Length: 78
Image (tube, rainbow, N blue to C red; front, side, top):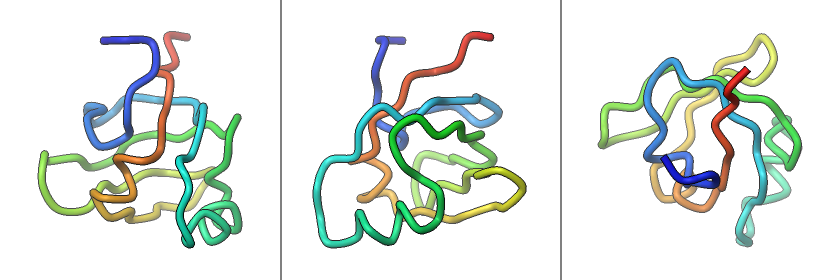
């Protein structure tokens, strides 16, 4: 897997670090939910279609696939 990938292609169970969020009016809302560069996330559900469910801290959040494509992450190998 390349070093930086979009969140929509990360496998379930993977832990990732947000590297970049590519613009849009919803970026502020993502920041409010704790999804910002440097944040650690865990992919809970990603079936290849429909929303991507991620865990931010102790909270599970559902992100639409279009938005997930714009969240660039690095898979945490630790």
